[in-house]
Image (cartoon, rainbow, N blue to C red; front, side):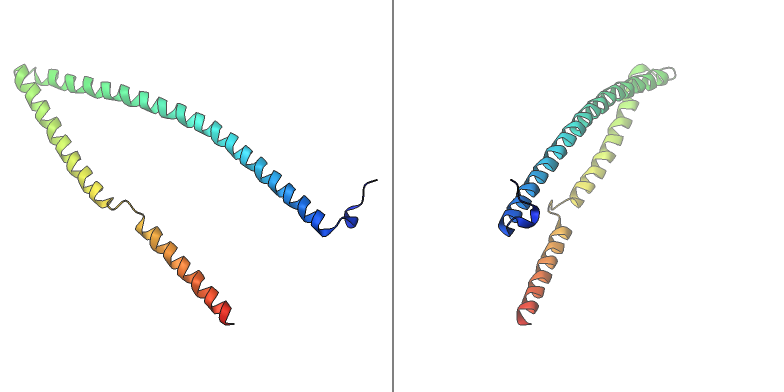
Length: 136
């Protein structure tokens, strides 16, 4: 014969609640794991497709550079057309490198200083609140 819920002791009810919460948390974690695995699969495929697009774009840029050399060769000797396009490409690469270096200097140090300060302020606030409650 089973007892009604009102006949169970508090300890039994707390144990049941604890077991149910544990099962719920495990089930939710399993669901999250499955969902993240599915999203990870799609993200991996997407990254691969972006990579392929980047490779093809690189070949396209190479073909465009060759086309510009050929077009300049119509009015200049071939060697000078290739030299002009090469100098322009190196100048653009130099400017991009300088801009990249400037951005890298902005990223140093790698610690999230604002977040660290915010956490320190939160800890100080909690400490202050605990001290105030202990005095009261």
